[in-house]
Image 1 (cartoon, rainbow, N blue to C red):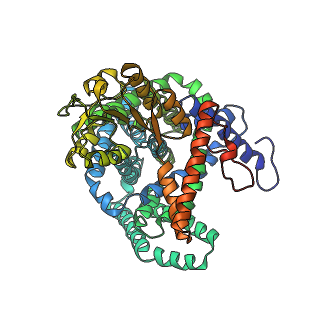
Image 2 (image 1 turned 45 degrees about the vertical axis):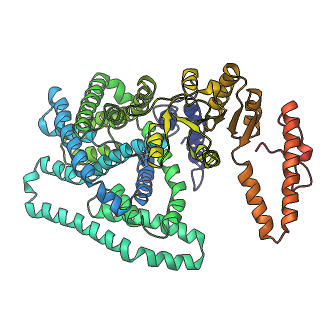
Image 3 (image 1 turned 30 degrees about the vertical axis):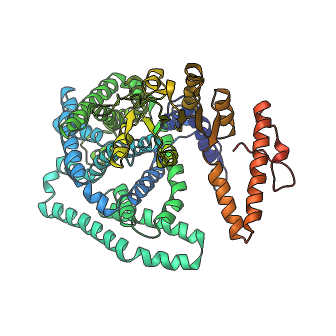
Length: 586
């Protein structure tokens, strides 16, 4: 920073936080994602933008702790049994992708006229995907726990493991490498395995007793310090053993995944993880040397396109070989097509042993950073251009007109319950739903559910809406429920329509659309809970019943006023706890 303060560099901290707070919401609102916002903010305030920072690599080294903490939290979600079940994906799918990508990507350097060893190192660095970017995107898309997300996590874990033999490969390819004996290599492997074994033993026999003592002391700040100590201590220990810090944090998380202190650890580490991971992306944006890009733009452009294209081909080919669908393979290749943070480690090692020059290192780092910057754009293009998946309806029955039955649209948690009193009294119910999986599951429990989209008029007609005894709209999509109500009111105005509503506003919209009696989905359950509490406090049953009747009457009167006026009408009918009426849209 141009301005320094004594002690803590407050201007630098304020600038970093301000850049993130401004850029990330803007980019997310524009549909570009938070990662691209961080990268753009870093580029803007870095040495090649406004010049507010001069040493982005120093920030990057600190911010890499965000990746470490992220992997610790991922490890907490993976019990050892679950990790064991992923072994085929880790050592099959992951290893196949790494080996095929290495073979293809080293061809880029050879085609550009570089010797074999630097070409192999350059291509191998690009093989190592950015754990930070991919995991953040999986989290934002809600796919970490999904099977397709778990397969990507498996590949990332294998790549983290691969950094160890790859660093050994760099040492082997270096000038003078024959001086390294097999004993030295065996010793390196033994130290790494010993570090893993020691960490497993500590996680199994040491950490839980320590946390029990700390919990008994009831010192929250010490518990937080202990959580950070575990994450950073495990990372440091694995680094000392020649392995990656991220791998150590992940292993520590796995070992603690079945601990009774798991949720406490996650809550303590999460704020640091989010802050440092954001700082990591800011630092990557700052580190993009525009001068190097301008000087070598042809070489960098060719390399980025070639590396990215060949890696995409390798990812897609391996995905299809391992039986992934075309759609999943495409999503995987746009998520994993970039180089990653471990490439900087590999290139630094290659520079230190004389395999590549300082100029080569700068160009390769620019290639990696540009590929990181492009990833959110690839994902955005994928999500916007790829057609939405076509739902397979093979084997699912189409709606049929069951005469004068009750038509129930939507068979989720609400529809399942509302069907029970009707079926119990012998009323025929025709049920339609648009979720094939839910239809199949319902069939296993003895329900006949037809496949159909209730927002389509032709489907409603086929299901017998025109002469149904009544129609129940039980879906949870507020807008779709109102559209269905409008269609029914226009097409069959004499058929009574009942609907589930989300809140008072939604109820008003449904009534205006022709629904005779919308039922708020939480209203009765909330009243029942309130009645149970009154009984728990010793109130007489008669007093409980009278109170509920009074609340229902007040609510009905208020709703009538809101229906005639607006949502603020009838505020005086609310029983507040601060001596005045409080607005409540529930």
